[in-house]
Each structure stands twice: as C-alpha cells, then as structure tokens.
Length: 328
Image (spheres, rainbow, N blue to C red):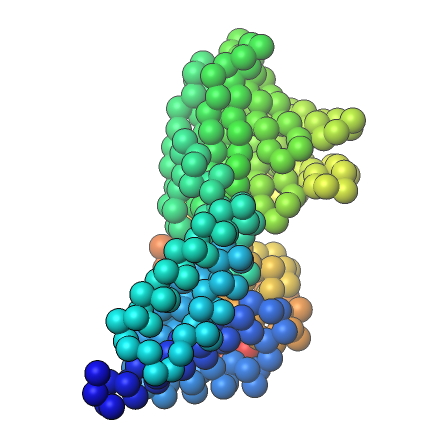
C-alpha cells in the first residue's frame, strides 16, 4: 500500500465519521439554521463529501438504532493506518454485527423515518412511497391503500372480514348491509362497520378514524365511540378522544392525487408531505414551522412543493444527497 493510498484511506474514513456525526445531529431535533448552513457547505466541499453523506444516509436508513451505534463506533475505531482492504472488512463486519444486534429494535422507526419496520416488511400487502393500491375483500368490500401502508387481510372469523392495519392509511368500503361487517384492528383498538365507508390512519402511535358514509363503531379498551358521516375520532395510548366534525374532502384528498391543507402549521404539513416523497424535508427553523399554510398540492408534481413553499414563506431550501432537503 503506497503512501498515497494510505492518505486516501485515512481521508475516506474521516469523511465517513463526519457524515455519521452530521446525521446524528440532524436527527437530534435540535438542528439550527447555522447547522444547516454548515452541513450544506460540508457536502459541497467535494464529490467525496457528498458521496460520504449519501453512503452514511443509506446505512442510517437501513439499520436500526443499535446498528447505527455499533456502525458509528466501528468507523471511529478503525486504525487510520490499517490497509484499506482490512478497514473495509472491519467496517462491513461491524455493520453485519450491527444488523443482528438491531433486530429487536427495528419495530421502531429511526429518527429520519425513512425505512419500514420488520412488521411492515412482513405484511401481506404494502405500498411504497407515493404508491396506492386497491384490494378487493370478500362480500364486495374493498380497501384502497394510501402511500407507505402495510396491512394483513385475515380469514373471516365470527362472521366478519378482518383487516390488521400495521401502519399507514386506507379507505375501507364495506359490502353493504347484507354482507359481513368489516373489522379493522389497529394498535389497541378495533373499528367495525356493516354498511359504511371510512378512512383509517395509523401513524405516530395514534389511530384516526373518519367516517365518510354510514356509521362506524370504534372500540378502544373499555370505551366505544359511534362515528357518523363527516365525523372523526382519534385514539392512542392515552385513550379515545371526542368525536368531532371534519371536512372529509381534506382527509381523503389523496384519493384524487391532491394534498389539501387548511390553516395547518407548516411543520405538520411538512410531516404529511414527507409521506409522499423519497427522502426527507427537515425544518431547521422552528418559527417557520409554526406559520400556517393554506394550500393544495398535486402529488404528481411533488417536486414542485418545496419551491412553492420557499416562494410563499420567503425561506431557503438546501438539497442534500439522499433526497434530504433542509428548509429554513
């Protein structure tokens, strides 16, 4: 190994360590505008910097929390003068060990929310980013799966068609009053209907049920809520909330390839947009996140959303490898 190869190896390892440090900072929830500026400059220093960030992002998105800790330590502990082939073997070996160590943690989403959990990967039906899918159930019932949705269809039991919603969102249409009811199990709750149409969404630890037609019964622990047309209820670990009136066209706008926001904080709008695009939009300005947005965006033009937000709010966007955009 020549001195030049040795220097190249050391520089590559240093870039890997720095890239992982940047991703750790990004996921801390304490990113500042100054951090964003510094990261933008760091990625722009050379193609090698940008490539290191993309490689670290891929590792971060693939491995669980325990894996990332092991991988980060592996990068930090590789002796700087070890031959390149041995360093690569050490890095890959540590990553392999990290994968095994992280299996128990993969049911929890990582900070950047850019990879599916084991339970999602094992689902009978899944949709990817920006994908929708129609499923027919027995007795004329149907399901339309939204983006990043995972579910299982269970064999009819006790006279009902059962769906397990593992993650994501779906619109469920029952087959009519003469057909078997449809039961959707999500988290610690159960939603059932015999002659209805409803939207059910499970993310972030909470389940939101919106009745579009007919009447829906929502059970959580020892409480039951009756949800009628144009009404909605949310339940989570803390219990079941109050039934409220909503505009169903906003809830199900994704079915018409549109996202509608009505006086929503920009931070929440960004969370929703992130479900439909590869990578991640990260708000680095908390003040900007509190501003309200009133807009409609076409999902088939999702690449236009960030420039529109930049124009409306007079902010800045910095694009990084891996589809990451720093906004603010």
